[in-house]
Image (tube, rainbow over all chains, first blue to last red):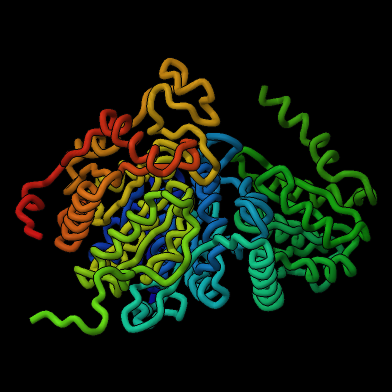
Length: 374
Length: 258
């Protein structure tokens, strides 16, 4: 298939359709609404289920029901809506069902705004609903990657009976760039042994997240964690740029990773030996890869569109062996390549002190920028 | 000439009920409601194409007691979960079984919107005017003056608001095909309740929209009464507040003969 000029949200929606999504339930929220609109036209035309739910709470529970039937099912939303979905995600995880969710992250907390952000990292990667479970979280940095990861998400969800979340941001969702859509996959005609579709000619099946006996719930928790161990062993995804001879490493994902790449290229043209590590699977997180790279560079700069949420994972991977600095923009602000380039230049000339708190240092450096806006 | 030898079965477990001892309190009407649904599934030969959605509350384990496929919803979300199933499998029969806290409090939004959409599902609504599983708190259907563990001096409507009449409320929605209230306090009303449940499933099978049967039920444990006193209390106090009746019977539903 040839490349065409595609908007991120529509590209992800069409990719899901081509990956054989049988049902979509969602609710309008900027900056993801084009997904909902695209599905509203395409799904009925293809004889598949589409419903605009009365809320994200209802949408995720419709997804929960549809997932029980063993079909490929999707919802999409943006940060405040995803917060509302956390209850349902915990139930889906507790029932061990494959579900795909696209979160086109926007500025927060609270109502925030509709601009691109990465403020949902913690709620998707480390937090969210109650209980012990981990969604797989994948962060695209281009429209093409958003397409490819959407298709992959359905395969991973089914392989592990696990939630897979595409953590995009308003930038990925709204921008247009040339990309190639995947071929159409046939809809599933065979369904897993656990699927609830009516007990014709077989024993009844029950799908539930309730294990009233704590010992049974503990066994279930253990099984979920065993699954997660397999995910951690097999599903790490990341990209490295210019890391072979790098003295300095920039780490960023999604849009922040993409902008960082521009800054890294500019720094390279000035003779600064800097590389980029771009995690694609935020959960599972490539800790060992970061740890290994940390053995070959002098320092690390973490760049995010939040106040340093992945930063905590980098610090965990680096274990204090080399100094780390942080640069973030928050609340829907997107960094320019020059801002990151300035940070790279500063570190290249001054280095970073070992220890201390990278977030506090960043806030001190950044304070004049904030004060100049008031 | 009628045979006088052998055993004649006059009463047995419906095939759609599983052989599982239930957890309900002695005297509770949940067992009656379960049996009526199972009898209807048997009579309509629906067991093998039915998917039930259990709620949170006393009937949280309903999935154990029916011999059909079942899922367990989050509190109040059964109509949304049922919607997800029905939209993928429109030729299956999907029903929810929900109490008053589940349906009329935390799940009000999901309930109203499922009805408003004319979602082709059946809701069995157990109204016993109290939270049973959490041991006797005020429900959205608790009567004015009724004592519960969170309205210890009786429900004061000035402070705690008025009870919600769900059948009446949902009957105003165009998507509702069949919305009625029945009671489980005596054999005659139980027979009428079964007929209503049958009509509700017939409504769904014919694709005539949202159907709900509200069943006035007892909770002798949390009402602090014997089962017999509870049945009498239901008759004397609940029926005046929640009149038995047909609140919405769409014209094409009215034509169904069972």
